[in-house]
Length: 154
Image (cartoon, rainbow, N blue to C red; front, side):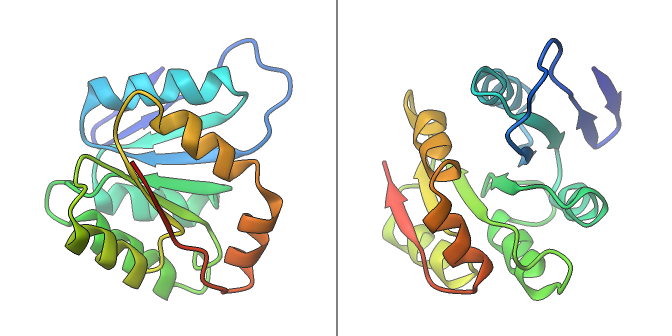
């Protein structure tokens, strides 16, 4: 594990096949590590950014297969990060899944408006729900085509 200020770069050990690369933007070290372990268990390679700005930089540099994005980040909120990713020609086709403790209707509505494909409320089954989405080729193809695919999962 390499820790570099605002970016934690983690590549799973012992995995020979990686289905896709995931960028997890999460400022809580504990929650990031927990999510990383669950995603690795499903065969994903995970890079972690701990701020929105470092997440945007990493998305542009590595073009992950998907971004899992917390809403409550320091300096710039997850909705603004998603909006910036979707406004950028280089990153707009990357599926963004909001993973948050916020379950209110306004947060869900904003997640949809900024271009996230889903708003997943943190909990015991959240990562399994996200993995199900990532394994759904129709969902990912509709996102790449710019078609609305938004859903809320609690």
